[in-house]
Image (cartoon, rainbow, N blue to C red; front, side):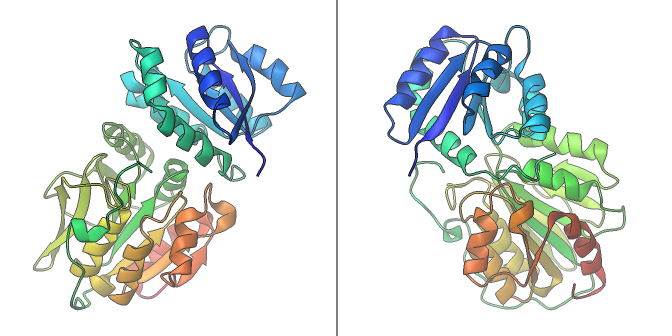
Length: 353
């Protein structure tokens, strides 16, 4: 396979030097240039366009977010943001993801050189993921791989059907934009939603708050014991698992610590399994854009418990990995483009979609 062509744009000479040297040692990468700001970078990119751009935020003449916006309009290119601002504030991270970045890595202001060397695996994975991203529709940790068994056992019974439906959504790379496209199109009268978006700790609260301002429905970062209600979306907090529980006719969520499952915390597999156990045929499971296979087995369990299941189609995904793995397992009843998913969610309230 051809090496991934990488351009580094950062006003720190130390960052440019260390990243260039680090990636040059990796056989899968070719550093085709480094620049101190976006205007210098554009001049070099016109001569040879990169497969992935590693981009800082604070730079002279043009900041990274402005450059990202310009790039996504004129020539969409996979971008990994690497900035101290993403450590200082979640809003910068959310803005970068909303504008089309496919990965964000925070770097400290102190001990920068040591951090970059220590974060080699994270940077390599982020660039590799970005290189595989599909940007046409844009407006794993190195731990032991665990299944949802690490958090709760599989369902051994089917849940009795009730009239109250709920919807579970699992997504990762590209999911912030996809979720905004869905949730902003939902009316106030819609099923309660439970969402796992792979996102670092501290960022999910700001993400939920931003969506809550944009949407007709209520969007919250989930807290332990929160009720699942029509017209409300609960987003799993970064760094913790979210499970559905049932008390009589009422659904609520449990927010729980635990090891990463399918290399993620929160894990889609954990959420989907809990819904298979607690809701069965009263649920709709949707797996969307993202890298890896988190959620595929859980969606199959939901289908086996009588739930309806959907996957986002390849053309509208940034990365088709998660839906593709669910399809391989036979966990998906229907495949829909992103633009048709809001209507399917509303339709699920009245029966099979």
